[in-house]
Length: 280
Image (spheres, one colour):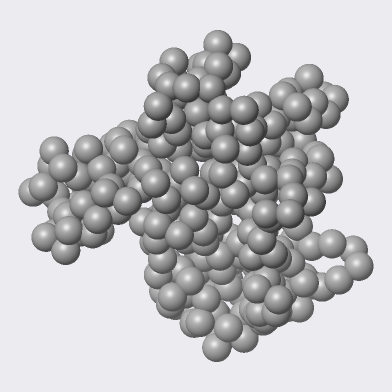
């Protein structure tokens, strides 16, 4: 979350599909099962990808970044026919030569490939999964292509198109605008002092919660804007970073109750600020 360059690589290089035990969800990569089902956290994912390609030569190349995220999202068309209306196209195989790491010659984009690799891994290794997981993944696999195609079509709509719905807050134009504003990817990671780490221990005794709090403190310090004391909290992306939704379902509640952080939700945006003692 702090090293954006490393984060970019996890979204553009294939994951190692293996499972050490039934609590290991690393085969999902920097996604969670819930995130893939509901496309949660995708604004940050696509913005990181766009920024990685947009500033490859130092200057902003918006159209190059647009082609890159189109390639990443590509899903093969059911029929290999040309469509006149651009916003109905979901197959971007023509970008393979330019972005061979993001889309295949057959129009299979990085995310499409990653999802089906996960499903194939589960199917070929049923002994590593519970019956409930196998049943859940089978249902996801059955519906994924049509659901992802519909989502991609929505993202391709122009914000001013008459067919654009107000609830469609994830569009390529919005992603590219955010990428342009945020600029080049950066490694914002740093080490907290031993005094700060000791202070963290006074708010939580669990190792997992202490690591989560340390990450939240560093993320806050690295991203806090000058005009407000609040930082947007990309909860789904943090879940993926920690490899478990227990961060959002358990750790955040614990940290708020302990007084280590303060959190608020308004207008569908989650944001937080840390206890001032961590800034002294």
